[in-house]
Image 1 (cartoon, helix red, strand yellow):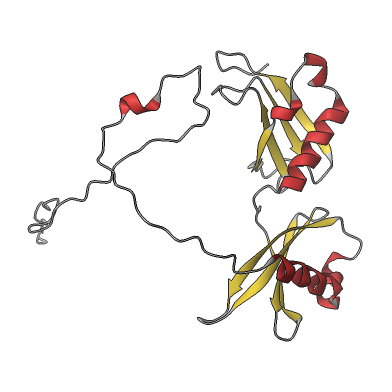
Image 2 (image 1 turned 90 degrees about the vertical axis):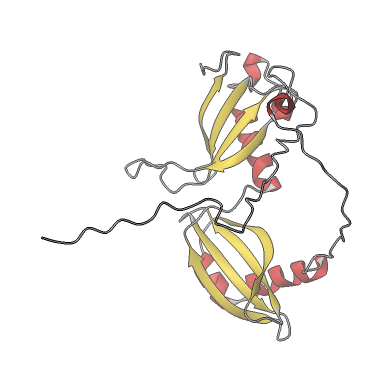
Length: 226
């Protein structure tokens, strides 16, 4: 017969330690929503005190960002990946290769193949250090947001319903259906409506890879789409 072992019931918090209470301040919504209750009434009041903070300068200056883009696009290592493709530079960040140095990282999206081309720049040599191809969806850029709105505006589906397209806010979404023709595409979910209302009044799904509006609709104030 095998022995049976039972672990002692753990004590929480462990003896000699105090459980840390993390205050929940709730969301900061400006302007406040007019169609849902105020969140603060559901939260436990917490004592707060002001703290000092220091504003840090960007690690990559605007001049360095533009230089990094110029170097990346001029390199044969990058152009070989993008030749004949429809692409856009989405962002210039930084990549740390050691503890002392941050290198500019140029993030390029290839809409033809739905791939991200990451180009690490050596600022000292003003040359490309590394080029990699990744499969993920970077955050939506202002330029892409404007492009998605323009596609919706050109389609007239929502303008005919008197939807104010200038209120549109968006984010990147993904089609999780492996069999979908839009799997892996750069999809933008746009929501329209007054900024002081929790529920949108209309929505649009835009495929930036295929440059077309996938679906639009109106949202009832009970939360259903039409």
